Length: 210
Ligand SMILES: N[C@@H](CCC(=O)N[C@@H](CS)C(=O)NCC(=O)O)C(=O)O
Image (cartoon, rainbow, N blue to C red; front, side):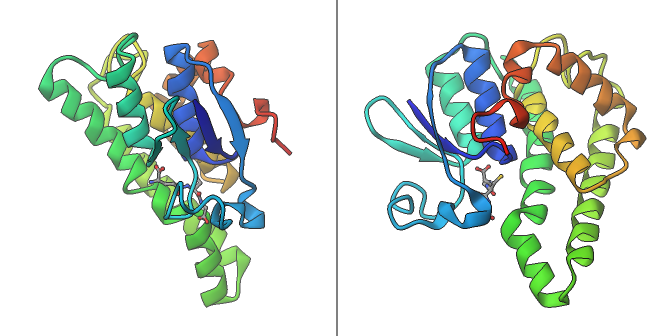
């Protein structure tokens, strides 16, 4: 398989964690986002949205959207499972993952911040926006886990929820969000990063890291 991504892309980071948890080998192709390589003519046929990640399977088919990719990996390579067996619990994990992937991450994406900066003429405004989006969204995530026993988001092993949370915390720090407000999320991050599957997927460990 080939993963088209970027070291600092948190959506690519989600897929890297899932591949590591499954023990699946992959080749990496890096697209430098600030240079606009995600919109290169030879990449757009794979991902018409001009975003990373894209996973190209062994048979050459290409799949976009990190959550769809992670769920496809989970269904195709079921061990270890990344979603609970019980339908209600599975839906709760997806709800948490989507609180991040649908309601935080897209609002602080590179193309949105570039637009905010262009509209306001201020890099400070775009950074303040990203900080607000992360703090506001992660406060809700902290509350969503208030009655969960840990050490992971939902129970004793990592799920799609942790796969979304850990990369988002890295983003939040990049925008100077006050993550100390979220002790439960930080404890989960420590538990997750103790696993090589999470630690090895970190942006700083990737070959294209700058
Ligand atoms: N919902 C998509 C989001 C993909 C996405 O926004 N990727 C970012 C990097 S994390 C990107 O390619 N940004 C480039 C841009 O905004 O131009 C997914 O989960 O795959």
